[in-house]
Image (cartoon, rainbow, N blue to C red):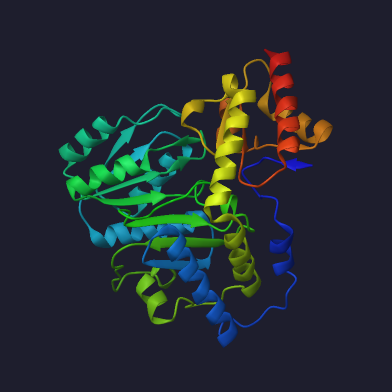
Length: 339
């Protein structure tokens, strides 16, 4: 079985072994030492000042980030070119943020001069977007946006769920980003992560679960967190959060594009997630066939994929080149036979 899905990802043996270790109290000295070391390692790898790790999903991490935007105040701009950009908009509305929206067709890239024009017109003090729009695979030009926002004195907030662990991320110039323990990091889902540069805020109305100041005052562990989940994340970070892993994904990206390029939605702007529209067959049936007949796991069951008759494959986990090439060949042959 070769797992090319968006998750749950296949785990490295050493990550799996971390879950077999005896659980220890999240209040113990040994745990806190390991936890704080993990925070330092993430800060060093991402070039950021603080990292907060907590039980929960990437969605919760985004809620915490959005609350920080609310506390900072000021008008903003949200970029959306897919399902998860639309989710950020819906979440931002619930947080009662003041913002404009710059939207494109799903899978279409943003034009930087247009982003600059919208930021200027909106007098935006912050911008929020998905680094990789997971629904389409489209990667936004983070470095260009950081440079633009530096010139405009605009804070950058970014959802990095599908890029951290797959490409090198330099958070210099980013005020806050979010990710999770699954996907590219390569551990089990269940831990949300917020990384920041600059001060965090709180208020009398801030929920305890969202209160990053409370995290700081309690050494980063304000409530119960599973030690085995943290130790597995630490092992996954050692394996996947370095330049060699990023280089591996970049090399294998070329392999995907060589074999499936004509089918990938906006393939020139994809890096670790590849969305494939299905023309003459039901995408759900195709996904089931790949799993049952060939042992290839792709993503096809999310509502947004079903609605558009799409499926997806990713490079969130490492595979031997020969196995990946064989899987891509099978997918290519099936798509050709249905065209």
